[in-house]
Amino acid sequence: MKNATTNINFYGKIMKKEIFMQFITPSLQSRIFSATSAHIYIRPHILLQPYIAHYTLHIQEIANKNKELVLIPDIAGCMVFTPSSHELDIQFWGATTKTVIVNNNHPPQRFFIEFKPGGSFPFTGIPQKELLNQQVDMHQILPEWKYKIQEFWFSTTCIYDFLGLLEHFLLSKLHHNESPNFLNQLSICLREHKGLDEICAFSDRHLHRILQNQVGTGIKVYQRLIRMNQALDFIQNPSLSLTQIAYFCGYYDQSHFIHDFKQVCGVTPGVYRKQMSDFYNESFKF
Image (cartoon, rainbow, N blue to C red; front, side):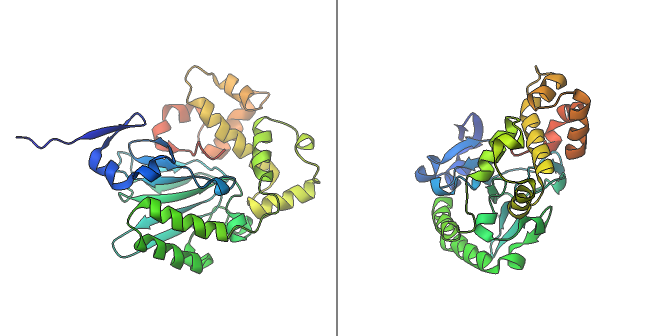
C-alpha cells in the first residue's frame, strides 16, 4: 500500500497537512488573513497595527527555481528571524529606496516582522536615516532585543505563544512617537495624489525632518516609492495599459511614469510585467 500524503486547501493554496499542523494552531488561525504555498500572513495585535503591517511565516518546503529574487523597495523596514537548532539569527532591515537582490534558497523556516513606513521608529527610537538601505545584526543596534527575543523563541513551542511574548515586549517599547497615525494618513493621502497643502499644515522643513527621522528619507522619494508600489498592484492586471496605470498613479504622461518605475525597480514596467516571478513586492504594507 502506498503512503498517501494528505493535503489541505488553505486560502486556495495546497499545503501538506503535516506542514500545516506544525504551524497553525486554532488560536493562530483567527489572525491569518492570507497565505500562499510558501508564506502565511498574520495580523498583529490591534494596538500594534498602526505600526506593523503583518507578520510573515515562511515555510518553503523545496528549493526555489529562481536562485535570486529582486526585492522591490517599500520604504519600510523589517526584522528577519532565521532559526536553527541552537540559535535564532535576527537581522534588522532598514527602509529601502532601491532594489535588493537576495539569495532565494531560503532555509525552510523564517519569520518576519513587516513594519509599515516609519513603523519601527516608535519602538526603537533610532533615527531611520541612519538605517536607510542597511541590513544589520540586531546585536549591533539593539542587543537587549536580541537576547529577549531569543529567550522567547526557545522558551515556547508554537508560533502563537512566541507571538504573545513578542507582542507584549513590543508594546512595552512603544513610546517614541507623538502622532502614531500621521504617517499612515500621509501614505493614504499620497496614494490619493493630494497636494501637500491638503495633507498637513507642517512646513516643508518640519515635514522633511519628521520623515528623515521616522522613515529615513524625504517627501519626494517617499511619494515616488508609494506611487511605484501602487503601480505594482495595478500592473498585475493584464487588462490595464501602462497609460492607464500611469494615470491611476497620478502621472500626467507615460514617459515620466516609465522613468520613475525604472529608477525604482531597475527595469521598465513592460519588462517587469514579463518577469514578475523574478521580483517580490510587499503588497500589504500600504
